[in-house]
Image (cartoon, rainbow, N blue to C red; front, side, top):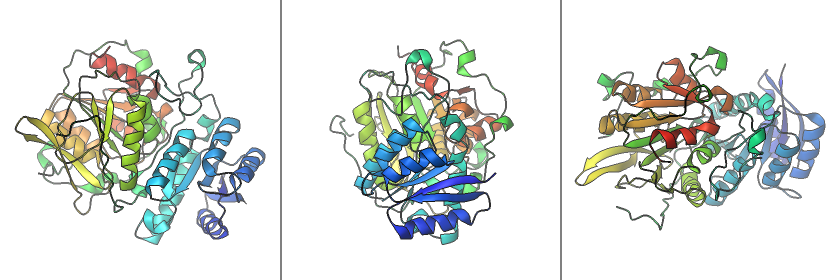
Length: 429
């Protein structure tokens, strides 16, 4: 059965172009179009599409408002189209928090340099998020443990929470890495050799981006691992010096779920590697910083790694760890040619393995592809701990599945339980 898509945009040219791309794929079809958010709500209810593509800026009713209503009345995977501007970033993050599954740049030339590749990525994104429609149409839950954190995405009372989650994000493979980077300054924080790796620790000097090949996203293909709900919630007794988290599609909301319950006195520095455009990471870090008890900032070159501070890798860059007099600092640098992801979870995880060896707690969250698998191999070889988000709570079970299928995951954990498990594991009660 074909994936049924509703295309929503006030531009007749854009509606026609997106419809042509969707209908060119034999697995999908556009069942109708809408010219504003109000019309989108009506047609979403009557047509029950599998996926909706939605513009943000529209007359009568904007895309963010439409997403909120649709996710409340008729939950449907929604792909947003956004401008790559600072204001566009803020609006897109609001749309993701409201319930949208993912977003793409509105200008196709910003999606990929090659037009055929841009078309393929748009089609791929629709197919991936369509897999979540059955989950969205069951009760959803969001972890809002932190008392001061703003509720996100239709939270429901604890007594009725299920183990499903409706989350969202941006995927690097569909985000331009060449967009201008805007650094963010957190006024509450005093600011204080590219690791190349392939398939094993001995090839740390041979960076190979070919690990980004397609990963089967079917949960049934994954190795069986115990989930957190079946395990005693007690610390392993290991000592950690760093928490490192990698994510992509579904990541912004997933990260908010993980970070908001962490205590203000969290004892470790945190590295966040989220696939996201350069113009978005500053706004995203600032948003997280207002919601979290810990401090969150966009990583800057030379930042000292301090406990209780989360450093978000800037879009279009690579982040490594280097030893300087007085401690470990961040090296933020331009990405070498041929690296698919900017930032790359593999590169940062690999650097963490060299600097921290067995003292890293690494968590791989929802996302397309396999970024993080090779870096996790290096961490595992040094004795660090690897957790993967479980299939049930992922928007796209790609990156975590790659970890699980490679035999690297110590546990698979539902998104709603990850923050609690981290606090227990690092002794932050």
